[in-house]
Length: 271
Image (tube, rainbow, N blue to C red; front, side, top):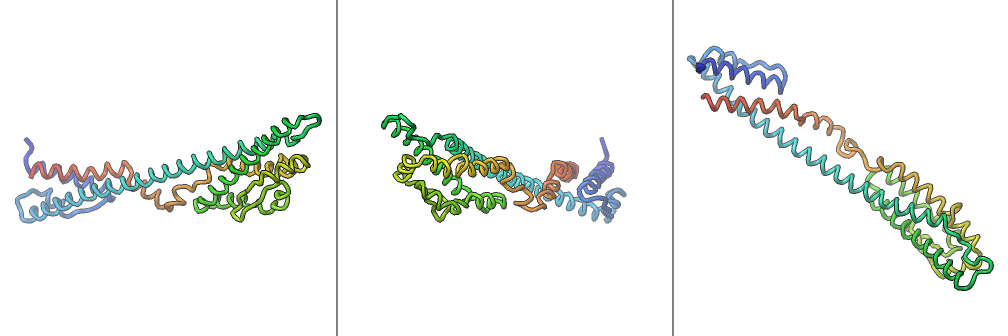
C-alpha cells in the first residue's frame, strides 16, 4: 500500500499538471512544501493551500461547464431562428416565383377572333385570376421584407427594390392596378376586365413578360440566389468574440477543468 507521503507526492504532481494545463506554466511554493512530507508546520500550510486550490479548481470546472452550456444554447437558438427565417423566406419567394411565371405565360388575348361570348368570359376570368394571384403573392413578399428589414442589410436592400412599384403607378393604373403607399398592389377587377376586352395587347405590355411581371421575375431570381446570405452570420449578430468563447468552452477546456475535479476527489479520498 502506498504511504501517505507517496500518495501526497503523486497527488501534488497531478495538481501541478492540471494547473499548468488550464492556466499555463505556474509555480506554487506550497507544492514544494508538500513534496517534502507532512511532518512539519510548513507542510501543514502547504496542505491548506493545495486543498483550497483544488476547491477553486472544481468551481472553475463548474463555471466552464455552465458557460459552455449557455453558449451552446445561444448558438442553438441562433440556428433555430435562422432556419425558421430561411424557410419562410424561401416559401415566400417560391410562391411569388410561381405566380410571376404564371402571369408571364398568360395569354392576354381574351377575345380571339371567332370566340364565343362564353369563351371570352372564361378567358377573361382566367387572366383576372392570374393577376389577382400575382398581386396577392407580391403583397405578401413586400410585407415579409418590410417586417424583416432589420434582420440584415441585404433584406433591407431587397425590400427597397420591391418597393418601386410606385414608379410604374401611372401605367399600372391604366389596367386597373393601383399602388398603395406601402408599395402593395390593389386590383380593380372591373377596370382590368374592361381593359382586357378593349385592348388586351396594352394589358400584356404593362403586366406581361416584358412588363411588371418580367421585372418582378428578375427580382425574385436575384432574391433566390442570395437565399443563404440573407440571414446574418453568427459573428455579425453576436460579435467576433463568439469564436473566442467557442474556443474557451471547447471540449478540450472541459477536459482540463476535469483534472481539477480529479485532484479534489483524490484529496478527499486520502486525507
